[in-house]
Length: 156
Image (cartoon, rainbow, N blue to C red; front, side, top):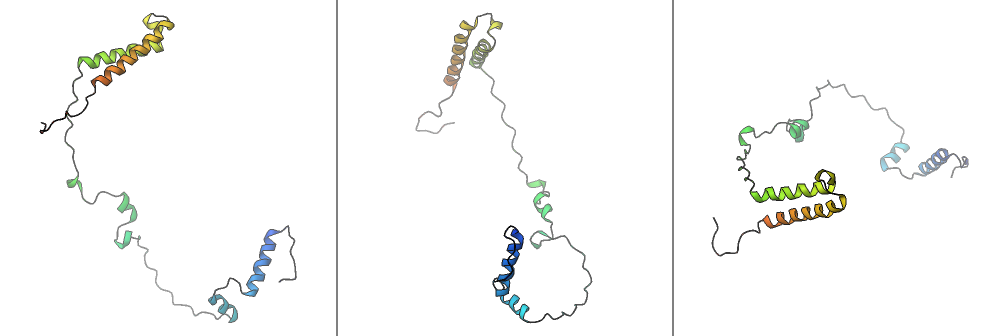
């Protein structure tokens, strides 16, 4: 090992000393590095300068198309093959039951939020508001269709 010991407080100097000792022993060198250290460096002959080629934009997978054009560009299939969905059917007209449910729901919210508008005290409006909301939810659940009836034949 190296005879000079750096100050233990100087971490960089300590690390440099350890690395220098390991390099002197040949630790961590690849065979080519060992050969380069053993043989003196020869000056390499200079290669003749090649004319600069214009830098072409690198194509995506060698196809000649830039990456941005491939990923972010227009659809190569064209506009002819786009799917155009049909017009949706019109919404069904709400029945009388839907208006009753909506009425119970709005009255229940008004009684809970601002009972003074209805003209009832808070102690009476709170239970009535909760009851009106419960009735609205129950009526909504009763209006939900249960699904196809059990039958053996096809349905139209």
